[in-house]
Amino acid sequence: QLQASGGGLVQAGGSLRLSCTASGNIFSINLMGWYRQAPGKERELVATITYGGSTNYADSVKGRFTISRDDDKNTVYLQLNSLKPEDTAVYYCAASRLNTYNPRQWDYWGQGTQVTVSS
Image 1 (cartoon, helix red, strand yellow):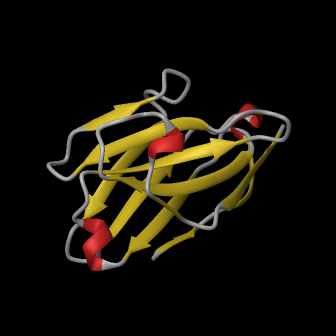
Image 2 (tube, helix red, strand yellow):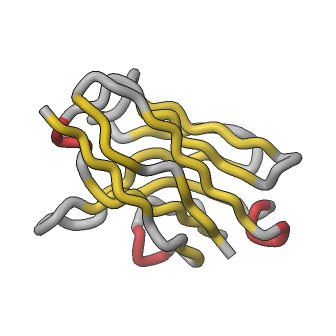
């Protein structure tokens, strides 16, 4: 129901674009977003976008990452610029009916896509 793609290996300072395509009934849900999880760390919020297009970012990615959505394609994007080694993680696309940033309360999760940033 959520299909993520676009991860890969990139050098520090490089860019990637992640895509998440959702089935129609999920795409119209209240909140879409991206989380990430690095080895040995908890899953953390990266960015969210509401059905109306309002966005929210983790402080660590503000000014470098951009979340957007294409309603015609039922797809949410995460543009990752100026990547740093500490951005290395598995990135998960997710959807929530609630307006919450607690990952345990999100309803749908994609399979994850690996982003690796080399120094």
